[in-house]
Amino acid sequence: MNFRWWFAVCLWVLLLISYIDRTNISIAGPEMVKDGVVTESALALANSLFLFMYGLSNLFGGYLGDRFGPRKVALFALIWWSLMTLFTGFVWSSLALVFSRVLLGLGEGMHWPLNSKWVKEWFPSHERARANMFWEFGLTMGPIITGPFVTWLILSTGTWKTPFIVMAVIGIIIMAPILWSIAKDRPEESRFVSAEELAYIQKGRKDESASSVGVGDVLRKADFWLLLINWSGMATVFYGILFWLPSYLMKVRHLSLHMTGFWYMLPYILMTIAIILTAVASDRLMKRSIFAGIGTIIAGVGLFLGTHTDNLVLAMLLISVSAAMNGVVLPTIWSSLQRMFPSQNVGIGAGLLNGLENIIAAVGTYILGLSFNVGFSYLIIFALIGGISGLILAKRGY
Image 1: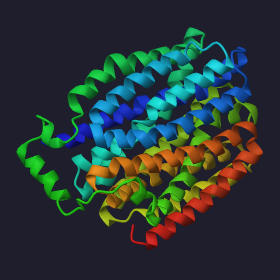
Image 2: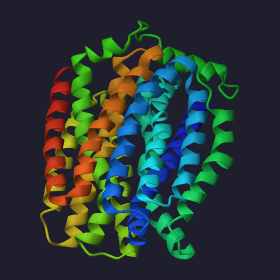
Image 3: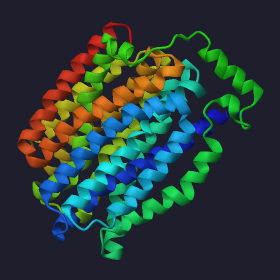
Image 4: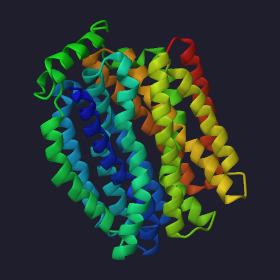
């Protein structure tokens, strides 16, 4: 029995809920502005501060996961961000929205590095790109569901509040009990893992380093910084599209809310395909950063071409390909990280990588929220720099 893959599905659902909770604002936000509840500048600030706090939370979330185990920390984070999602559904002003997004980022940021720690513990090294692929499906499926689901909830109930309330109930009532019963810290602790499967997992990780590293060791590692620049270049493009594509389509391309929800799905459908193909190829070739480097460069080029064409269909195809490159970068970036650090400290490395990356990406997200012309130029340049960094890391053996 290969229970580890069912465990990966559990991690997928957890990230799926997380991404719907963070992306529903991209559909509901313009409606909140239209109702006069918040201003456009406050919405831009709220999205940027979400990423900033999300990044900070990653830093101590990885540390807490290493110290107390990912299961307890993940359960606390899930309940926290579900409550903050509920709070967002009842905001009454721009200040309240900013406050709710900051608190949402605090909860969701603790979660991401825990998944990386779980993959390190539950999967042998030659399966980790595919394992990362499984839980990262939540990142792609979340926005795919968000577009039509949140649009339907708003249009059918007549209020932007509904999506936040529904997702909060799903997180607390449904997902929290599932997480507690299935997500053990190590496969040795799970009653669902057979002796044969446990031996297989342990054999696949027995040759890895058992030495311990601290925050200073991580920050002094040149390879870590190359990985961070590569990941930040891609993430800046991804988060810009994630949070601002609906506004861009409605303001610049003059689409309706219904059509915006439709086009919002396309980047993430392509990203899902990219994750599958990349994870399989990367595990087979045991090469990671060459995929990440080339994918980030393609993201920058695709975004440039997509924002400089008048044809809507062609523009959306190019922008969607740009966002889809996140599916090429994701499984390979995290497989490289899991190779860099030992099991007992992979949470620290993951927390630092994702935390710093989100803080860096918050800058681009804020600029894009203020000006599409300036913001897109910033995203494109950063993506090209990130891609070059990935290619350098590939030459160093990752």
